[in-house]
Image (cartoon, rainbow over all chains, first blue to last red; front, side):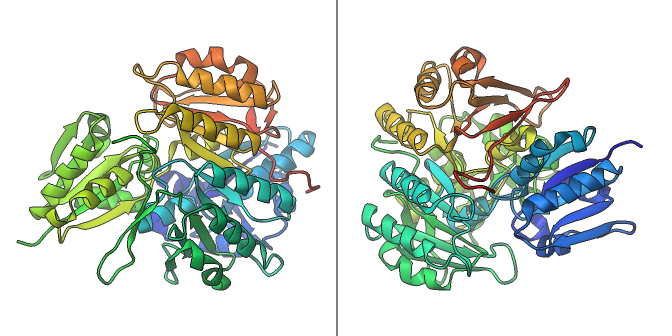
Length: 256
Length: 256
C-alpha cells in the first residue's frame, strides 16, 4: 500500500476570501478533513470527502489520528484557523510525528500557510504592526506563567508591538488582565490596545482603547479575541463615524 | 468630483497561488497600480489599468502619489510583497496621510493582508514559529543600530524565535553578521537558523544551518532573504534527500 499525506492547512481568519488558492486546492484534493469542529465545518466539503471533527484540546491525538489515516493511504487535510504554524496545529503535528516516526515511515507532510489573526486585525485597523513586533500566547497550559511574564517584560522593555494569542478562556480567566496591567505600567497611558474578535466574519467586533482602560475592556474578551498592544510610538488617526486608524511609524529615533 | 480610494495590497510571497481572493479582487478593481517595480510587474494587468512603478526607497513619496491619484477620483492599488503591514507600504501610507490629511479629505483607505515572508518560510520548512516569536527589521535606515541591538538582546534573553526582515543590502553589509554573532552567544551552538530566499518562486533557495555556522552561511544572503533564528528548543527532524523539518515545540518547561 502506498502511504498518503498530511497537509496542515491554514484557513485564514474565516471569510473564504482570505483562503489562499493554494490552501483551497489542498482542501479540494483531500480525502479526509481533520480538525476542531468549527474549522472542519468551515472547509467546503465535496462528494467523497470524510470529515473528522474533534474537540479543540487534543491536538497531539488529532495529529496522530491524521498520520494514521495517511499511513493507510489517505490524503488528509488537517485544518486550522489563521496560519497553522502560529499557535495552531502544525507544531503539534511535528511533535506527534517526531515522537513515533517509525509508525508513519512514508507519509508526506506539508504545511499550507494562511493569514494569521494578527495580520487580519492589523489590516482591519490600519498598520499597527508597522514596526518590530512579537506574537505571544497567553496560554499557560503549555508554559509556566512565570515564563510568560518574563517574556512580556522583555518585549515591553524592548518596545515591540505585542500580539497576544489565546488571551483568555474559562480555564484561564485572569491572565489577560494581569498581562494588560503589566503593559500599562510600561507604556504611555494613551497607548492603543486593540481587542478584535472574529475579524472577517459576520460577528466581527473590534474595539480600540487606551491601555489604561484595557483591563476593563478585556472583561468581555474571549477565546476568539486577538489582543494587540501598541508600542510607545503607535498612533491613532481619528475618523468621523468609524474606528480610528491605528498605525506604528516605521522609524524609531530617526527622522524619516 | 468624488474622491477615490487607496487599497494597500499584500501580494504574498510571489506565487499567485498565495494571493488571497480578496486581494485579487481589489487588484482587479483598481484603475491604477502603484509600487516598487518588481511588485507592480507581478500584479496581473487588465485593459484600462495604469501601472506606476517606482524605486523601492521612496515609500512616503509613493504613498503621497497614490493619495493624490485617489483624490482625483482614481481607485488606486498600492502593492507590496508579503503582507503590506509587515515592514512594507501600509505604515508608510499612514505616515504620509497623517502628515497632510487635509490634502486628501475624502479618500477611502483600506489594507488587504497577505502571507508575509515568515509565514511562507515557516510553512516551507515545518513549524519553526510553533512557540512565541518576533519579527525585527535589521534596517538601520529607520532606527539606530543600538536600538536594534537592544531589541535583539531582549528577545534572545526571552528565548523567542526571531524572524529577521531586511537582513542585508549593499548599503548595510555587516548588520546581519553582527546580529547572528550576537545570537550565537545566547543560543545553543546547534540552534537551527533558516536562510530562505524567494520562497514560493522559481528561484527559491532555502538553507538550514546550525547557528555557529550562520555567519558564514549569511555571506550569500541578500535583500530577498528572510533569516529565522530558532529558539533554544527549536528542533530538526532529518529527512532522506530533502531539507530537514524544523519545528519549535509548543511547550516550555511543561510536559505536553
